[in-house]
Length: 138
Image 1 (spheres, rainbow, N blue to C red):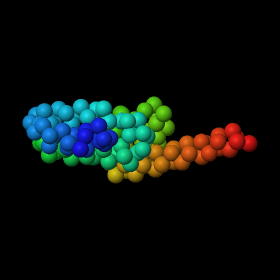
Image 2 (image 1 turned 135 degrees about the horizontal axis):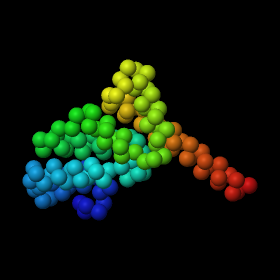
Image 3 (image 1 turned 60 degrees about the vertical axis):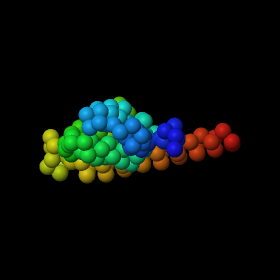
Image 4 (image 1 turned 30 degrees about the vertical axis):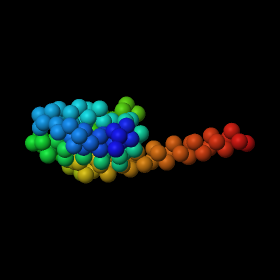
């Protein structure tokens, strides 16, 4: 298998690990770098793909002795979101406040809300594209 055919950062990492026998220290550094480079944009704004990739990288780091707790994962996800997600961040903060978790992150809530948000945005973009196509045809 050629590495060029792989698109998922975690799959690329597994391939490199098998191919080159990376050391623990190098593995942690490489996984951290991949995590840093993994953004919602790099996952085509697909929230599920983005979250799955972050979790896979988290699991990879744990395998090499570096544990990221839920709070760190939430902080990473929230700080890596693009500016266009400002209203989402405010909504998420409001949900936390209303559920008595003000000042604390809640990973299951974040995953659920981010997935819903990215799905809603994808649906809206698809509808807009269809509307534009109909307007151009008519």
